[in-house]
Image (cartoon, rainbow, N blue to C red):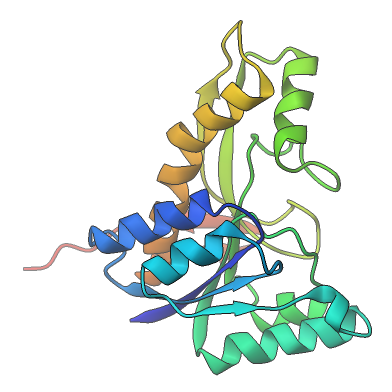
Length: 213
């Protein structure tokens, strides 16, 4: 059973998708051991507490610099014996120390089909506003590993979502969450915990299950 840490900063809808999947037995090889927030007032903390999941708050401004923050985050994750870190709307940037300590063990969901509308500055409604300005007809979401390049890690799963003519950033955001993010993030988490994701030469692939006789 792999211990999972979910890192949050806001409402926690993706966290809720993970909690619901866990309750439904869809992550049989892992459990959410803790939820760590970068904000005291994140509603995601209430979601975790309601589900009986331990919560922690780690505020960036309580540390002298990024290195001190990274060290504290790594220490906190290690105290829960975490084997997988899931970013679910985590808005605080961490550096190489965390990435190297958990290499190919940190996953993130992004609300557009990478490499479109991704990288520094593209988060939340900004992504969907940019997609609508560009006039794309299809958007979506991938789940990817986190590396030192913003939104640049190997893609694990992805799903396309149609853009409708009357979409607003808010309606498009909701559809991408419902049709892609809330489905893919729990699935990728379950696959990782089952040891079914491999990374080679910067490409992630799903290892097929072997039949039991």
